[in-house]
Amino acid sequence: MKKIKKLLLSIENTERDLLLLLTIGGLYALGIFLSNTFVNIYLWRQTNDYMTIATYNLAIFTFQAVTFILAGKLAKKIDRVIVLRLGVVFLSLFFITVLILSERAAHYNIMLGSLLGVGYGFYWLAFNVLTFEITEPDTRDFFNGFIGVLESLGGMIAPILAGAIIAKLQTNIGYLTVFSISLTLFILAIVFSMLLKRRKATGKYMLKEVWKEIKHNRNWKNIVFANFFMGMREGVFVFVITIWIFVATNSELALGMFHLVLNIMSLIAYLLLSKYLRYHHRLQALFIGSILISFSIFILMNELSFLMFVFYAIIIGTAFPLLNVPFSSLTYDVIGKSKNINDWRIEYIVVFELFINFGRMLSIVVLITMYVMFSEEIIMWILVVFSQAYIGLYLLMRKVITIS
Image (tube, rainbow, N blue to C red; front, side, top):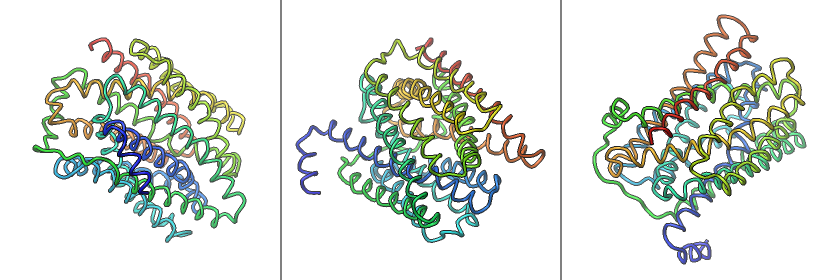
C-alpha cells in the first residue's frame, strides 16, 4: 500500500486522481458485474415470482433517487470523496446482508433493494461529480471510452466466472462465494478512495434553482428528459432479460456466457470509439446506437432460445457504447455551459440522475400494474414499448447538438 501511494504521489495531481477514479470505477464494475446480475436470479430461485424481483428493483431505484438528493447535500457540506466512500460502504453492507440472510433473502427483497439503492445513490453522485471535475471537454470522450473498456472487461470476466463458480459448487455455496468476492472488491475500492485528493465544496444547496433551469435552458431541458427516456428502458430491461435467459436455459453459466458475448462486443466498440470518435461524429453514433437498441427487442419476439439471446447480446453490446460515450460526454458538456456551474455543478448532477431514476421507477410501476391486471404474456409487449424510448432520447439529444 505504501509503495502504491508513493508511486501515485509522483504523478501530477489531476492525472493521479483520474487514474484513481478509473481504478475505483474498474473495481466497482467488477464487483457489480460479478454479483448484481445473479442477485436477481438468486431471488428468482427462491420464489419464481416476477413481483418479488420487480419490487426489489423498484426499491433500488426509489432509494437511489432519494439518496441522490441527500448525497448532493452532503457533497456540498463535506466532501464528495467521502460521499463516494459512503456509497462503496453501503454496497459492501448490501453484500454482507445477503450473505447473512442466505436462503431467506427473498423475504427481505425490499430491504435489500433499499440498501443497494442507497449505495448506488452515494456512489454515482460522487463518481459523476468527480468525473466532471477531473476531466475536461477534450478528455471526456477518452475517459468515458476508457471507463467503458474497464466496465466491458468486468462484464466479460465477472459473469462467466460467477456462473462457473455457481455451476461448480453447490448452488447456495456458489452464490455465497460469488457475493463474498464482490464484498472483497468493494473493500479494495474503499482503500483506493482514501488516496483521492479531498475535494470540498462551499455554498448553499440550490437544488430548486437548478430544477427551475429546466424551464429556461433548452439544452438542459433536453438533457434531463433524454435521461428520463433512458431510465424508462433500463428500469424493466435490467432484470427481465436476465430472468428470461435463466428460465430458457436453467443455467447461471449460460447467463455468464450471454454477458461474455455482450461485453466482448462492447469492449471492441469502446476501444474503437476511444480512438476514433470525434465531436462531429457524436450525432451519427447516437443515431445508430439508439436505433439498434430500440429495435433489438424484436429478435426475441418469436423465440426465447439461447441462440436468440446471443444474437441479441451481439447487437446490444455493439449499440450501447455507440450511444453511451457521446451521450455521457454531451451531458457533461451541457452541464459545463449551464448557469452558475462553478457553484451548482453538484445540483446539476443530482437533477439529471433523478430523471433517470424517475424513468426507471415509472417503467417498473407500469410493469407491476399490467402484470397484475393481465398475465405474464404482457411483459414482452411492455418491453417492446419501453425499448422505443431510446428513439425519444436521440431526438432530444439531436436538438442539443443543433442548438450548441
